[in-house]
Each structure stands twice: as C-alpha cells, then as structure tokens.
Image 1: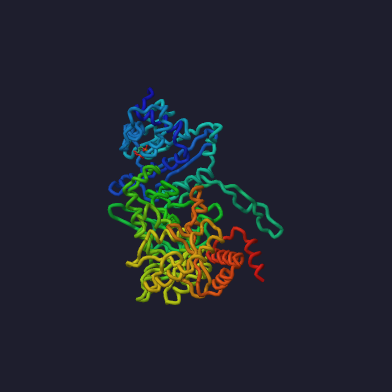
Image 2: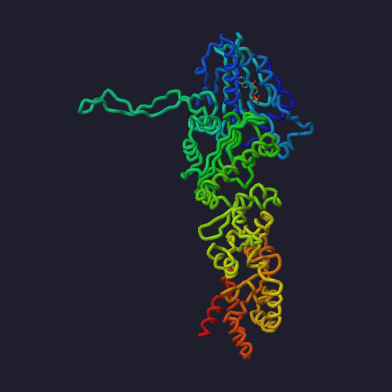
Length: 640
Ligand code: ADP
C-alpha cells in the first residue's frame, strides 16, 4: 500500500513542530499516556453496558516497554483501540478538533519566529511523538473488530495503514527513538529511570496503572550455608513489572480519607519544605467550572530558602495530568506565596502561558481561590494572632505591594489583612486601630522608622502618646505608600506625626507660636544659614515637642521615608530626590536657650556650632546617617 499524505496544513504543522518549536520534548510521553488512558476510559465505560467486554476494572493498565537495541519505546494499552478508518481519521489530521485555524499565509520561514505561540494553543497530542522519534508505528485493534490495523509514519512525508493481526483490543504505540545529535541525547529516553521520572512528573495521577519492568537488586538466600547452617544471603537482580504511578492524587481524595496533617506532610515532601504549612485549603467546586484545589500557605518564606524549593505558582492539572508546573498567572502576585494544585476537567491539556491569561475558566477559578485564601487569612487573623503575625512577617510585603499595585485596584480587597505595630508587642488591623480610638481622636497617627525601636523613640511621639492616642509605627519603606493608597479608614485620615499638622493646637496657640517664631526670625534664619545644608529649608519653633530639644520634619510631598525608598531605586534621577528638611526647635528647652544666649552675646561661632550639633542630633534621631560623623564628634567634644 502506498504512502498517504497528511492533510496539507497538518504536514506544515508537523514539520514545524518536529523541527523547531516545541522545546519541551519530554512531554511526548505524557501525551501518549493520556491517549492510552482515554482509550481505557472509553472501554471501561462501554463495559458498564456491554458484558462482552469481559474485563474487570483491575484488568486495565498502560504498559511501557523499552528495547534499547532496537531503540524503541512502546506504550501499550488495553483500551478501546482503533479500526482502520479510525486510525486514518484520527491520526491523519493534526488538530482536527481544535478551534485553531491555520493561517493561510503562514510560510515556514516565518513560522519559527512568529508562530511559536500557536503551538501551545491546540492539542499537539499524538504528534509530539515525532519530537523524539523518527518513526512511529501504531498497532491497534478496536474493541469488537476482527482485524487489527498497523499505522506507520516517519513524519511529515506521510503514513501507511495496513491490516494486521492483533489478538486483543487495545493499542501499541511504538516510537523509534531518533539518533543522538549534538544538541539532544535522544537515547536518554530509552533509560528506564528517565521514563519512570517522566511518568512521576507528568502522569503520576493518571487513573490507570502505568506498568514498567523495573530491575532491582534484592538480597536472596543462596544454596551456600554459613557456619551456623543458615543460608548465605547474596545479591540478585530481579526484574519485575511495577506500577510506577500513584494513580489517585491526594487532592482527589475525600476529606474523610485524608486529614489536613496528611496534606501537610505531602506539601512538605513535594515542596522540599521542612516547616509545616501555616494553612491548608481544600476546595471542591462544582458549578459553571468544576475543579478541586489543595492550596497551602507556607509556614516560612520558601522563596528565599536554599535552592530546591518549589517555584512560585500552583501546579495545574487536568484530570490528574500535569498541564503546567508553576502556573503563576492563576493567582495574583499579592498571594504569590501560595503553593499547591488545581485540578479541573474543564481545562485543555495543552494550554500555553499566553492563552492562559485569557482563559475564562481559569479566571473564575483564580477569583474564587483568592476569595478562599483571603477568607482563610482572615480566620487566622481572628483566631490565631501569633500565627498570623508569623505569616505577616513572612509574606506581608506581598500584600502591601498588592495594595499599591495597579493604581489601587486591589486595595479594598486587601486592606483588612494589613496589620501594624502600635507598641513593642502589639500589632493591630486598621479597623482595630480605629475601634480603639478615644472619642477626641480625629485621625490615625503614624510615624516611620527603619526599625520599630527607632520609630517609637522619635521625639514627636511624646505629645501624641500623652494624649492617650495610639501611633502606628511603620517600618517598611513601602508602608507610607500603602497608607496613601488607602487614604482613610471609617472617614479617619492618616496623619504623619513627623510631617503633618497634628491639629492639637487651637488657632490662638498657633498664632502665638507664629508670633514667637517671627520674633526670633533673625536667630532662626541664622541657625539655618550656619548649618548650611541645601536641603534644610527652614528652622522653626515646634509645637510637637515636649521634653526633646529638636526634631527633623519635612515640607512638601516627599518625606524622609520616601527619600530612603528612592535612594535605592534603579533610576539615577529617583536616587537624587531629597525631602525638604525642616529643623523644629523646642523654644522652652535649655538647648535652644544656650544657642540664643551665645547669639545674643555675639559669640556667633559658638551659636553656629550649637546649631549644627542640634541639626546633627535631629538627623540621627530621624534615622539618617551623618555626612561627616567625625566632624560632629569633634564639635561635641570641643564643648567640654
Ligand atoms: P487528542 O487526544 O487531543 O484528540 P491526539 O492527536 O493525541 O489528539 O489523538 C488523536 C486521536 O487519536 C484521539 O482523539 C483518539 O481518538 C485517537 N487515539 C490516539 N491514541 C489512541 C489510543 N492509544 N487508543 C485509541 N485511540 C487513540
């Protein structure tokens, strides 16, 4: 029988696939096994109504055999099989069922660059065998048919179909593995360990047993006896068929069968994480999209852990077959720490990353899962605060970034998850802060520092605390931007106690203070000029200080915290941004009186030196580094 040609578009596509595009060649085995599994499904289903099938559920299996000398891998199933017509129809056209329409104007020159993304959009299926094989022989017998069929092809040049003998229903796919090239050692696919690893990786949860002949070394008694008359043990290699897949995935099993602890153990094993997960989420959804999910919130930040940890993103499965190992587009980045699996029969096996973003089912799944994750975190927040605080230390930053992302699109969704320090051992949600406010308090007060200790010891805190108001201490560079994004909680604005007007002074008090500053304007300007820092815009009397001599604040949009944030920016322009500094002086403090005395008694050098010392102190308290610490030290010691 002469060679038949593939349909024109199939031929081109086949060429494309075999020769250039699909870099992930190892998926061929997954594809062939999935077909075998589908074929068994079909026969098993038929046997429910047809007694003549004569097979028990436990009789079905997929068998992989290797002949190294002949360089073949054979995947056999005892499924429904194909008639000659079916073999021609099913194996003669690529992507027959897909919605994909091959672009008419595509030529193979352009193909490599432009159309690479196409390949992921439809079932590569059976043809992926040609990525590793230069000849594929399919021997099949359809259930109920008298005759078998042999289909054979060496790739794009066409195929032959001939009748053949086959005793039982089912299909053998025999792949003649290509010779090794410089780029690719095709021969590695002939290694049992390699095939076994590929089954584990992609097809571990295929419902039917995948059987391979595995050779092991065993200790067996020999004929020889030792001095006590017991047989001497010796090593023997034994080759026996073994089922290499685990078949039922843990997430497919019912909650009654598998405890959360079992799931946690499984998580630790598969993610190489020794820490128990902080939470296990199990979802079994049925509706417009059906799926099962088993998600984990890790107990520690495994992204930063030593290599070997699982990559970010969840694993996507379709009926137990792995589609994508680390699908990072299912769940937004603010929950990127979540690990686990999502398994949905509604997904197509060959979904590419590009297509994924627009896949409606996946969008729905992603949204639902995010709600569940948030629900779980809120529960932890309510019921186990220490655990939540650990979670927050590990992953809070992702949620903060999420609040600021995409112009605040997710702010509302995420803001209830934020917690901030209001004391050494106390962290509160924004809502708890507001609920705790005394009636007289009109705003949410916060200040920022590099560490909690530094923020708590800012001189501006004293006055606020003495009024019985709590202060939120921000310690991450992004925190201020997070609050700016949220803007208000229950109508209460945020006030930065370092830079903003606290609103504590009456109009009269403000007027009196302004007059006092005016009276001493000459001295205050002298102080500013003698300090001589171009970023210092003003020296003023403070209304925020109680017992401290001075503090540093800013005017304008850029605060010291933002400045610190910009200083590490990749953009040189951004790194140059500086906050406009204001030195606030406590007019009732002996330190100011000393400056004034020196100034009034015309000891201008001394007055200038004291001003510089005050400025340096204000900078230190604000967590800034001094440009010239040695000069500061000299100035201080010269006072003794
Ligand atoms: P898909 O599985 O996405 O339909 P494939 O190219 O993998 O595309 O396979 C094409 C068709 O060939 C299958 O739909 C099936 O009808 C048939 N087929 C492939 N392998 C087998 C098999 N082992 N047993 C029976 N039929 C098979």
